[in-house]
Image (cartoon, rainbow, N blue to C red):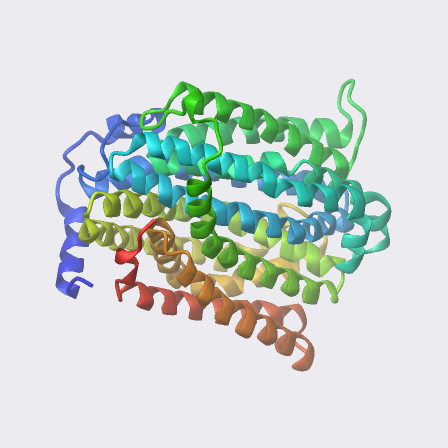
Length: 480
């Protein structure tokens, strides 16, 4: 780890020295896509070029999440609860897709840093093959066992009679979700986040247009209710995946896939699987922890689940700029380690973490002041507003730590050291968060508020510990 003075000087330099480039021009470059070598240009400029399209991409993704829950919210608390309960299972799928994506980003970024573009392209193709295989069992479970899965989570009668079709569509068509995750991770690892941004804008733009049309039956379309929200999502993401594949074969600024790459490569597939196991485990631990937490909250009624679901969507929306900056760190760490520049990789984490912390402090103040007003945008149910408002207020206390945790985790993932965050998550989420949530809610009688405080305690603790472990520097020696 660099001396504290070096870290402060690095951050101070990024804050005080005059920019060597036109902000407006580089903003246009970031949105269009840049051919810059991220292992050579200034760290501030590199973070900017990578983070801007990642932030815009994620803002559109979270905008759709908020718009989606807004339209579904007009169907009642049970409809919102259906979305929340379905997402507890989708989180398992997301965990695998995101874990695979972490590995793909790390591998592609490392190959690009090593100037091995052909190997980066071949690795991308193998990741796509794996994505299709991963989606099959989830599609089978969602199509044939939707009611059983929802009943297992304590769904109410309305959900079992009407909402189950939402799960059938979401899980049945999950291949487009997995491919969207993984192919965009290829673009990010290659240093082409602008392509990933445009693809997500297309997907979610279509979703936003189709949501009210299919939910309410506008014009010639039938009124499909909550099922319409799932169909809109599947169509939007399906079109986006076709666009991704076109972009891969026609080439971005840093990577192009050739037809000659379209064959199975056992060695590369094995490397992707091996590297992704830690990321998959990392996400499964976190996501299954969320399933247990939602199961505890469900015992306090659909209003509690709905409030938690709306609060989570609001958090997803407001965290997008922070995640964009953190994702930029993964690319920078991977490419700089590939270029044999570990100190530069570490410096990018400290600079980005500082700005992430400042941003999330601002978000936490906003949560603290406007928590219930934010939830009230999506529902007029006073109990739902109260539940969601309490969660946002409690979580606002820990965001300054959360900002550092986000970049530290992405530094491990970008280096290909996905196993370390998995071990950390196992301890803090399974062995601390779940038992603590149960004790606070059920034994101490604090109800859903006790769950929120347990989440605050566990996630603040995991953030501090992960940042401390990052300073030890073991991630610099990982090979992928």
